[in-house]
Image 1 (cartoon, helix red, strand yellow):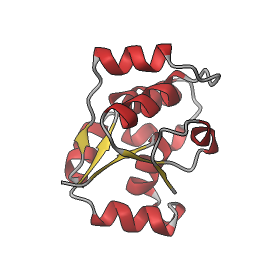
Image 2 (cartoon, rainbow, N blue to C red; image 1 turned 180 degrees about the vertical axis):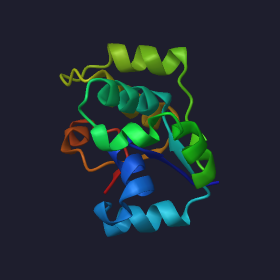
Image 3 (cartoon, helix red, strand yellow; image 1 turned 90 degrees about the horizontal axis):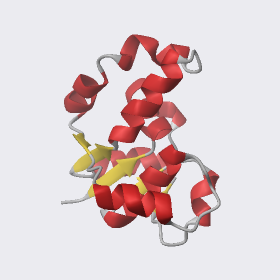
Length: 129
């Protein structure tokens, strides 16, 4: 079974504006058995909606779990091992959302679909854009 982990923006774009995804990302998302989304992405979207930083997601926020299910996606694991790996890893990047996504992808042997160049700093990470 082939599975991809979507960064928060990649997941949102796959739902609301697929044309913003790169052509390789669109092809990959369309060809895998499943896409995964981390629970931290739900938190990140909700947090940004609450703070007024992502108003266009406000109409979708409460139904995100249903939207993922309709998309055929599954929730990625968020385990103590992932949390510890994210917190203890030697990476100067401080964003907890990105740290958890990188650790989830690494420990679950998943490719992370992301446009964010910060992940290039993690050589162990398989990244697609």
